[in-house]
Amino acid sequence: MYIEYRKAYKRMFQSLSKDEKVLTREILELFIENPHHASLRNHPLDPPLERYRIISVDDDLRILFRMVDPSTALFLKIGTHEEIYRRIEKM
Image (cartoon, rainbow, N blue to C red; front, side):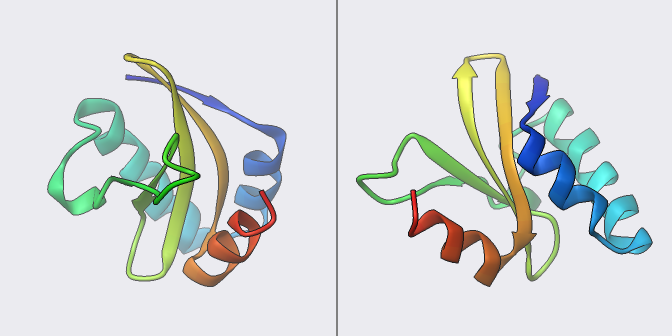
């Protein structure tokens, strides 16, 4: 799996704590190896946003992404459950 990053994701990633960044990098390695690993809790959003997906970094931290093609994911945003879902409502 190949990952591309939007500017918003990169900006949001920079605002994470050091521990969150380390954990996120570990999750990204797992995602690259197996994007559907059970611990990622990878799932699509409900219509009308079904082209977007979410993975879990930890109990509260989420990554919003969409598949560009079968082997490329575009990471859009990273943040707490509340932050991500609040931003999704504006999409």
